[in-house]
Image 1 (tube, one colour):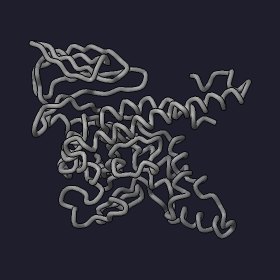
Image 2 (cartoon, helix red, strand yellow; image 1 turned 120 degrees about the vertical axis):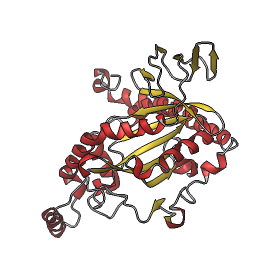
Image 3 (cartoon, rainbow, N blue to C red; image 1 turned 180 degrees about the vertical axis):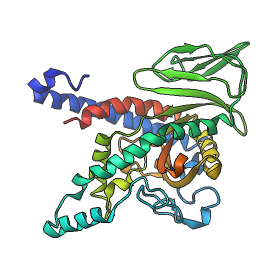
Image 4 (cartoon, helix red, strand yellow; image 1 turned 60 degrees about the vertical axis):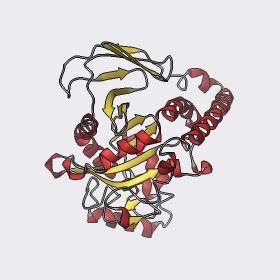
Length: 342
């Protein structure tokens, strides 16, 4: 709403000043992200998380392309025949070749709406089932306490009393919901504010119980896909560029620290055909140099081939976040919208 205000159209120089101010706040948050990262490296499993890009975990260790973090026998494009979320017909290839013969500088990425429509359609059809599988994988590790649960932003501590459990978290909302049901797969907390919809699930890890936040995301819009295609056109030689979009369906999982991130990721890495998720790519920003990051933010992104009903597949993404960093990311995202606005 701020960006769309008429005042910015009437005085564009004023908007430029706003962008400078927003960038200043972004820089401050970037420093905080780096400080959190440095602390995270000294926490249990911190170094293991940072080095996760060296081999992928699991049965594909010995067969990994270390530069791209992709098991070589699995696809990492939406147009691969094992996925076919994008189908490139021979006539489309002929049109592409003809365009290049007429103009070698032809901007092919501007003519990929047919592929984006295919990908958006597939994502729309499979998104609900993808989100369900992600949720059910977490629910397999759920601990049911049978108590009321409230969520607040007063601090970052957990406290429990008889018949009641309270979680204090660095999120900008306060919601209380009566949890109903007594089974192990009963209802769980739903949290909603202007910027986040998610579920908090109490899970059993190897050494302790932990509150894991699941934040499903809507299908990536075609408008946003077009922006990504323009970026990929300058970093990829393989057409169509839209096949590089690996997060048309996506979800985020928020944990406390590297130990929980690694263990939660392992639940998905080992599920394979049982749920229809097959790990095909890992992008670990915890392993990046600071200068290679955008805004200093770090997370761990895993791409999975999701095998949906009707033999329809798509590559989707699950992002694993450190809770403190995720809180900073939400702050950064609002500022980022101002900084990138025209």
